[in-house]
Length: 123
Image (spheres, rainbow, N blue to C red):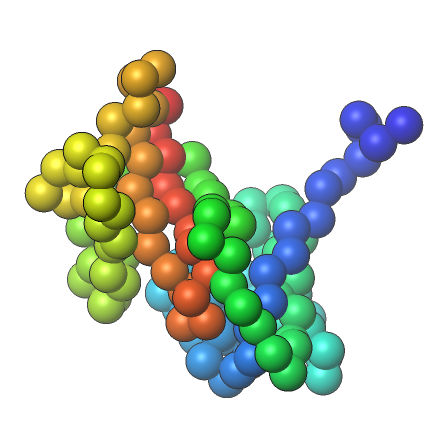
């Protein structure tokens, strides 16, 4: 039923004035709509709705991720814009914060201004 329908992604913010420049300027997503209840970005054809909420408890797991062709270059570019990459105890991450999954994927995590966990993956 939904296999041929576009998916929409959602993440929450308590401060749209902080989230807007992060998703638009830092991550480079196109802001297509702005309402009192959400910021809507185009994430390469996927609609990302950053819902505005009075309260937010960020999940401890990844809520959004991007597949990138060169994870080291992507990390470097985001770091130049002030993004800090996360380190997790017990995970064998390299100097850039990249963890290599058993299947060969390379993954690195960072947080948005609200503490939502985001990731980059190179397959």
